[in-house]
Length: 426
Image (cartoon, rainbow, N blue to C red; front, side, top):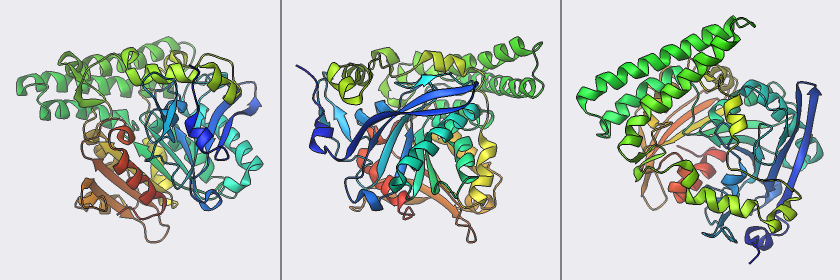
């Protein structure tokens, strides 16, 4: 049986097949970034446009489009066909799923070494897209989860510097990793709260966390004075920080049989994930590749990109956010409370440490329960808005969801998404 594209057959005029976007500035940045664009199911010309990024580094955003993670359709268990997702984020928004950086998914070209370099190519690609399709340059948002917390801040900065070109209004960061020097030291606390480690073990794991953060700072210092004589030491130090995170801070949960992306689930290696398997089968089918006009093997994660970003993984992108907020950008950070790898405690600490004009108001705020229309609680919300520029930072802890909030709590995630885009999240 050949796979069917029910999500696009049902809406034949509402999905632009994937295209490659050329972006070439010089010899160092040469790439063709692939995207799949879905128009809003309701009034696309007056709907906001959202550019969606997966994490990783190395994760393909196309996975989010068809896995039941807020995308317009959901691949069946055999990877043969799809059904419409009634909680799709393109219900009231145009959504582009962009594979970046080069090397991810169907995107090709020179693989960058960090998120700043990746932002250069992505900025050029989006410039090309909006120049050729200005009808979608309405109210633009950047959204993503996990490692998108590194991708999005430098890209948003470039877009805000060119506001006459693109109408960037806000960014959405789901269970993001933004500032490892802040975030990684909070993993032991969550492990203790969840009963994964004992009070006696906490002291040891906390010491490991401090050592991990020490390596992050060493990596930063080496980067600031980097030359050919220190390159090898720099790469080794950054890789040690990465390995220590996974072995010593996430390891206790894995050894206890708990899934680091959702502590309510049993641990399973990523290569055994049934959702990844069915999406890979679907994306590599002849029918889908013909529809998307591609002819190459699609993988959920590019390990070439992942390892090329070794020295980016311990790097902080925290410093991009204060200027974005102060200049009027709206920012939503949401975190499922069952995630460990990019957990809500770490996310909250990172948000509260931001030195922006609304920071003191946010730190004094009392969490309010955010609810569905029928009264069911979604989570706990804190917010601060600047009266002069409209810059806004919202933190939402989503109850009962893990690393992928839109998959674990689809109805709640769509409500949050729509409310933020319409500036009604409160």
